[in-house]
Each structure stands twice: as structure tokens, then as C-alpha cells.
Image (cartoon, rainbow, N blue to C red; front, side, top):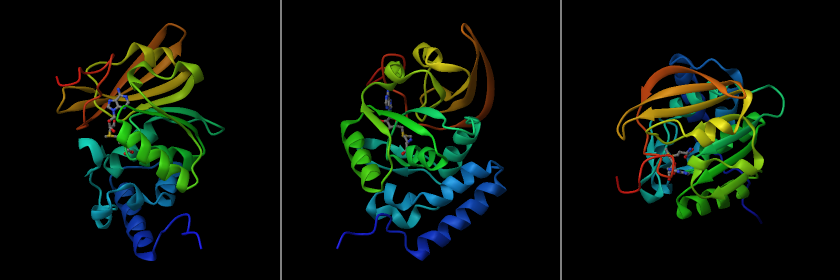
Length: 224
Ligand code: SAM
């Protein structure tokens, strides 16, 4: 017999509900985002030795020295995307474990996600397929975006950048939002860039976060 598509024991479901209550308390109000987080089995995106910690509101280590973002960060970034109600198209930079991509799929978005680590790209692809999520995944440098499928209603960068990559600005739909942490390699301010016209963008700053570095042609140098 095949294993169930979502091994999701009641214990994990209960922990997920408690996480939702915590996210509400921390100020997440977008019901679409909360509903999606309530559906995605985060424990399956964590290392098997850390599954008991999966519904704590903390980032956890994944392979290749990277992290699965804290649930609050995933919720806040997704909320800031302010996705259109119908068929949003979202580009994610930094597939990592695949969790954020699964949350975006659960909202109903068409998701395009790029990862630079081959190991993470392969494992996320295998897991997302096994769980039945349908999306576009690519191995490569996400700082250049994915021009083939542009423009996007929203772009989310899940690694910390030294500056906003021009390629990503150019791949946004007019009216769309780019949510990206920008700063040093240790702390970044969450920016929301909105494309207001073919050659114009507005920018607003949100709180401070700590992400692993965005490494690539329009990001940090590898080894810097
Ligand atoms: N969104 C992920 C999740 O849900 O697990 C968390 C991502 S982790 C905080 C950041 C990821 O960005 C890492 O997996 C890292 O390898 C990746 N990354 C860094 N620079 C990148 C680049 N230029 N293009 C694509 N991925 C990149």
C-alpha cells in the first residue's frame, strides 16, 4: 500500500493550530495566509530529527548550511505580497526546504521557485512532488529572476540581499509587490517594493529580520 500523501498525525495538527494562534497574537491578520499555514505539514519540510520542533515559531537548520524560515517570517512575507484574489503568479527566490513554496501553492498561487543549492533543489522537488504540490522549480541564481515566465504579480526573496536586484524589479507586473530583506549579512530590513509604472517603483520599510545571505550575480559574492 502507498503511504498516505500527507502523514499528518493529530499531534502535529494540534501543534499547528497552536502555532496559528501564536501567529495571530503576533499580528498576522490575513486569513488566506493563516489558512494556508494551517494546511501545510511543516514537520515534513524539517529534518527528521527536528520534526518535534516544527511548529515552534523558530527557524530550523536544513541541509547545506541553510534554514527553513521562522513561521512568523513566512507568514509576514506572504502577507506583504498582498496577492490578487484570482490566480496570482508568484516568483520565490530561495526554495530551501520548499515550505514557503507549499504555503504559496496552498493559497492558490502559480508558484515559480529558484534555488542555488543543488542538494536543496533536488530534495525540495522530490518532497513537493510527493505531497502533490504542482509548481515550477529551477536550479540556478535567483538574483537574475526567471524572465521566461515574467511578469509576476509578486516576488518574494527568502535570503538577505545587499541591495534590490534590478532584474527582479523589472520582472514585476505593474501594481505587483517585491518583498525582500535588504541589509548586511547579519541583519536586514524587510522592504516592500511596488511597481507603480513601467519605469517607477515605490518602497516601504518593515521590521528587521535575520536571513542567510542571497548569493549571486545581483547578491553577495560566494565566500564574501
Ligand atoms: N524559503 C525557504 C523555505 O521555505 O525553506 C527558506 C529559504 S533559506 C532562508 C534561503 C535559501 O536561499 C537557501 O536555501 C539558499 O540556498 C537560497 N539562496 C541563496 N542565494 C540564492 C540565489 N541567488 N538564488 C536562489 N537561491 C538562493
